[in-house]
Each structure stands twice: as structure tokens, then as C-alpha cells.
Image 1 (cartoon, helix red, strand yellow):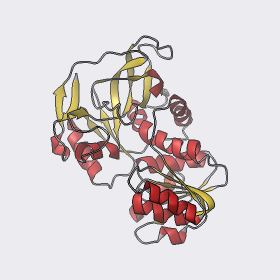
Image 2 (image 1 turned 180 degrees about the horizontal axis):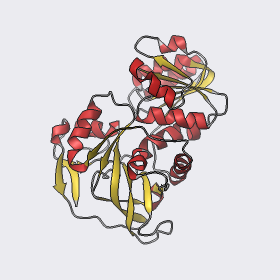
Image 3 (image 1 turned 180 degrees about the vertical axis):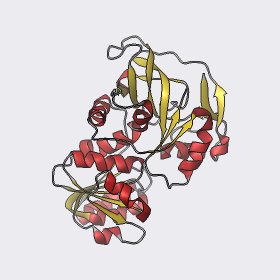
Length: 312
């Protein structure tokens, strides 16, 4: 099968198309013929930054996948060959969806809604699961709560806005001025230009803050919370202890979260997407062979929504 791999860490130019043996479904696994696979910032970070979860190359990146079940391993009862599925491979060590075929635990997948094409479905899993697990499982947001979502035009951010709105929250998003109309279009009640405004001065009474940057940005964002409020950080970094200590000093709470493969979460996302309440903005699609071009676009940090690889 064709796959995108790399032998060294570096820029997009290190990515190359190679041939690998077609994998086989093991115990409780699916073999999925990939039709589309989303990209996320973690992909370009693992491509170029030493010391991350996957270690040293060679490796095949990609956690998002949408495709068709080719075969099932022993013990699988939820799916049969021919079923259309989408899901997130176990993060972080289950990467490998930037290829023609991939295997993964059956319960990392859900049935793809018939109303979604594979590009839409392939864009959702990692980013939507991150937002769901942060806002619903961790923060347990309730109707009427004020939720501040940083980087609200990004892959996680624009899906988090939509998920928060389905829970009845009042959503404040941060984004650069050119992206304000987009953030409002996905449901934000307010949008703040973080380049022109000190967000910690503009927002002081949030019940929940979702932060993807970590470190000092997360610590500053604690000041946007009301007493007893919760900040959910999506970055594991050396400042985690300082973050929780600062939160306690300010009378608020902080949690640091890493997304997990989750069958129940994927089913919830599938239901929202099928009803039209959750939709990924597609910033660009690229054929598998053009993965380096997709990474170069992702490296700019200026995309709104998700980038997706298509596999013909």
C-alpha cells in the first residue's frame, strides 16, 4: 500500500510516499480502507519537533480517518466489511492513517453518518473529540454558562464553539480580526481580537476557558474565570504544576487534558454531525501524494478549520 512517511525530523520536505505491506486486522481490530484522513497541528509538530510522543522516525503520521471496513479481526461485533466508519486512532501511539489502509481498535470508530462525505467525516475525529472531552466530559458545561474559547477559528476551536452552543452555553471566541465573521458563523456570541485586546481584561467572568496554547498563556487565562471557574488546557508542558498552583491561588480550577480514543464520544459526534449541529470547515483538501503541501499550509498557522488528505 501507499503511505506517507519520513526518515528524519524536519520541514514538510522530509515527507515522502513509500510502499508498505498492507496491514492485517488483529484481535478486536478493524482494517479500514482509508478514503480521507484529517491533519492536525500534532501532525506537523511530530514531523519536525524532537522528543514528542512518537520518538524518532521512521513513522507514518495521522490519527483522523474515514473509510470503509475491509476486514474485521477476531472478537469484533460492532462492524462488518463494507461498513462506512470514521474515528480517531488511539492517541498518541496509534498514528498511521496517512496511508491507503490502517488498522485500529474497533471501538475507536463509529458509523459514518450517511449525510457526511468522507472528507467531512475525516476532518472531525481528533479535533471534535478533543472539544467534546474538554467541554462535555471534563468541564460538564451547562446551559447559560459563559465559555471562552481561545483560537476559535482553529481546528479544535471552531468545533468547540459548535459543541458549546449545542449545550446551551454563551460562547466568547478569540481570533484575529479577519476570522471574526467565520467564528460568528459557527455560533460564537462574541468574538475578541486577541491582537488588539487584552482578553484577560475583556473577559473576567467565564465559567469555562478552553486553552490550546498552555504555558504562560494558560496561566494568564486563569484571570478570565469567575471564582470557582475551570480552565481546561490542551497542552502537556513543564508548566502544568505552576498552572494548577496559580489556579488554586486565584480560587479557580485548572485541568490539563490529552485526547483519548472514545467510542461513546465518536457516537455523540456522529449524532451531532448527522443532525447538522456539528460541521467541520474544510480549509483545504490534498491528495495523499501531496501531503507535504498540506503540511506546508498547516505550518503557516493561518488556516481556519481543517486540512484533509484524500486517498483515491
